[in-house]
Length: 305
Image (cartoon, rainbow, N blue to C red; front, top):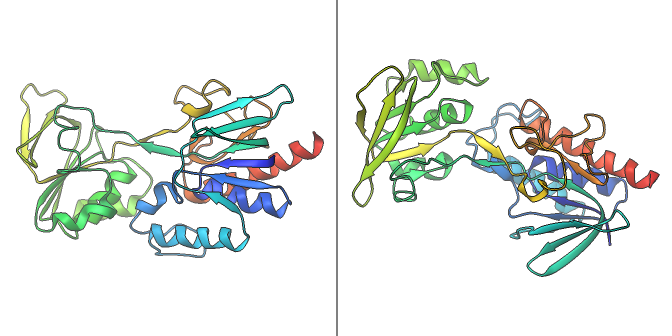
């Protein structure tokens, strides 16, 4: 029996783990991988005290910190089911293996929203990609399209401009959105980048690999085609809350609703932290702080219980 099981090993989950073991809670971290979305970030400039670091390097620092505290982590697994018993304790099932715990912190973050147009499944891995950090160098001197004009899409376009011959940003909004105005200024000044606002993709075409993107624009009757060798999808993300959707209250966006002071959900004993919750400002430093709050909230809950 564990005092606390944390599901997810991004900034929120690892921060929760550190605070939990500091409170002498018997803790287990369960996760498909360690790092979450941050490992795909080319450069992180807004984490206090560690400017200009690769996302994967920053997460390695987090991971090393956790390992030094001998926190038990099981990676490469997928939680299948969570059940609550008559004693208000929980059973977590993974591939017919069961773990029992007195409390849970859900820190499963978000996942990328996938492109859903004709050709999007056919050409995934053959020109359509969801990771600029992973795949940008493969498109050196080629033409590429970025689907999405938010912070993630802008960061992707900025990365690609270092390799690609031409970068098109297909943006549904009337202007670039997001909070990183410095990146936006760089994009507008970059001659390699063409921003196509109030438009959206309707089809991806090709042979063995991507060759074209067909898009439509608001207020225009005719579709347009651009020749590209790659399509980088950055249409935002959705919370990974399905695991507990029958156990806790969610908002309309599918985010877990939490108490802002304790991070407890509508179900006593289940806490949540990070991008999977309804906390505004989805930033890594916010997620780390929320993870600490969730662990401390769980500690108080267990102490009172």
